[in-house]
Image 1 (cartoon, rainbow, N blue to C red):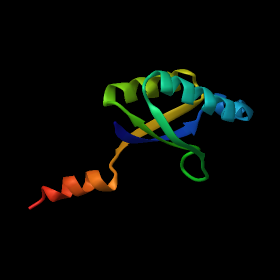
Image 2: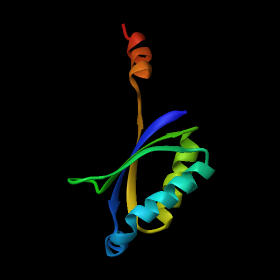
Image 3: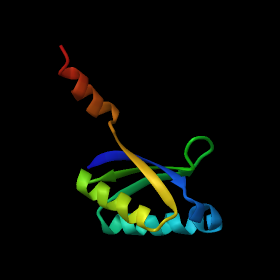
Length: 97
């Protein structure tokens, strides 16, 4: 499983229904689980992004499917990044000359 970070900003629709955001996050966890994705954290944030989500996913295709399923609901727009843990980074830099 690979780790990903998803940055999300609310759309106008998402802001209008902000009171439902916690319930939407719970539903997102269930959708993710059905896709074989494990949600680590969902954090509502101040600053450039409204929500930051960390999760483990089996592959890029599943991650893309999850992002599309979330975006299709119309409440957020997302940007997703692959994240590397300490052990992975040690292997990556270990190959540098």
